[in-house]
Image 1 (cartoon, rainbow, N blue to C red):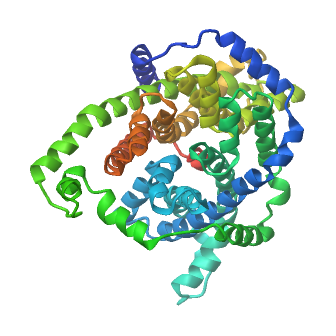
Image 2 (spheres, rainbow, N blue to C red; image 1 turned 60 degrees about the vertical axis):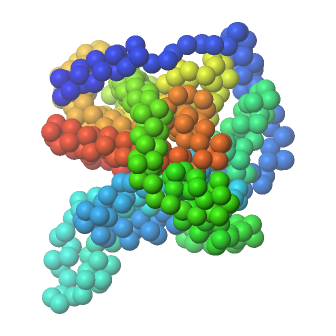
Image 3 (cartoon, rainbow, N blue to C red; image 1 turned 180 degrees about the horizontal axis):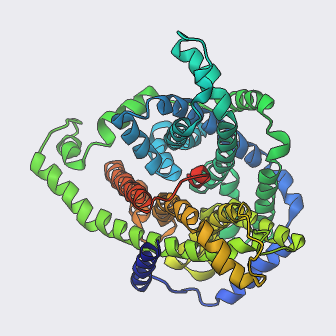
Length: 499
């Protein structure tokens, strides 16, 4: 484990030297002071004017999670088949914002775009996680069922009661993730909280932006009080009813997108120039078109994505190792201090990394620095929470060191390090998706080139770049699985890491 950790640290240091890290704003401290002042003096009354945005954030999340849960549950039952596993890996490898980019030309800027952008990748995530839960479920209750019980009954009475708590717990956590996804979809124009956050930051309204963030924190914190299992069906039904009034889907647009607009430009060139709309198949030109995009955009974009990912992977690990002790009862016996640290981690992991990166971008200018800090803080907070909770389960011997430093180094860290690596490598794929996605903020990861292609109305190029992104993420996920198997680290409660 130590050898692998040092290897990844060395790679991260090398990548840090290659990363574009600089502060380009003329007076970043003045901007930091203005933002800090805004967080201390938020304009809370302005929230009354954003009720529709808050409602849209919730309804998009409920509809998206319902679609993801429904299709993901079916995929989980057939996850043992290779085509299903590859399909789940592919759809979850594409970030929600990129899915929204794909749906914008088809359905337009309406709720369907946001709901599908959340539901499709979440179906892949649910499929994988539920399949793992089913695989790890205790099989003994099925032995008590009468002989000849059909497969459906065995599943309903012998499996569901055993895995129900795990399913409910993960679905609850995934809904929190859906709220974050719904919020950041506002940054591409959908009418959620992110839309108004982007406007507030861009126009320097630093008392309005914190008010919106505080409303979002309150929304997340209050989930346990109003999202009850018995009421979920009502919430989902009401959410679909609300968005149905704004649905406007054209079958013609869908057909044109799938059969014409995403075809490589060389196949459409002659038809567009002649005005006939004819599609040809010039294989040499199509091949050259793909090679040019790969060499000039995909390759440098993927390289920068990998560089950024490796830096934040190590950064998140260091953040976790430094901070998880602040919420561990063995290392921080003072309950008030543990509580304060716990709430600090809640804020960091609740704040979408896109929003943090956007705020840091206003302070420091466009480079990898805002993305590095944002992704590190967000993922480090999640990993610190999971590792800290795991450390609480450790039973210390009677002769455990009294000094916290010695207790940390010789008792706690050796016992949780394997599980910590499992958590970290589970997050690796997520960090890669986040690094790619933050390119739409002007950072030169592959998301930058996808955003540029969408802005130039080159949907064929955007689709090809998104496919490259998906395969890159699938590759990282495969490497992560191989490393975990080689180290023989258990996944345990790592379902929470599949955010």
